[in-house]
Image (tube, rainbow, N blue to C red; front, side, top):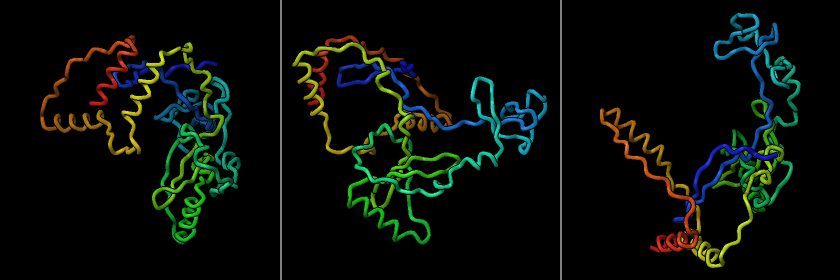
Length: 260
């Protein structure tokens, strides 16, 4: 099944413009519950907590959770029923495997959480951190928090440990469903020049501190200026660059600019 594009942008490769479509790579399979009126089983409208079926405002203790299994059709659960479904074995994070770091594709990473020892855990925490460093492995485990069983990867980070929440395998969409267009044959000179351009712009280490969110910075500056009574000058919109250009000439110009 083809994936629908969620947006588009252009990747600038030197002076070469590559227009691309964007696709959501993952999809959450977490159960999503609605707030229901326990008396009649109707979905409560937020934020007023109003039941349209009974035409009355609903108090918090008069609600329950509802899961929409089909369009407009719900099954309801009490808090006790939901609590009984939570697997007790995931109350703590049990390490189930140690894997090489390169076997986890970056697409799997969902969220990062710093980890530090709690009271009485200093020695064991540092032993685990040292073991991960010494073996050059990442620990994989699962634990439950806020109604969700997280798949977690623990790896050494600076002097401690960081946890990465991972997507489950069935939450990663199939890249084969993305339309990649027709196969293209390139002039050997184009391939060689593209490789040289990559090498010209290559750096040994990635440092996030060398980049900044210019939009965020501009908004902060504009807020400060407006708060001081200054007017914001809006520059004229620049014309979009054409996508259909001579690829060889664009690579050649890009390489010259990169060298300078």
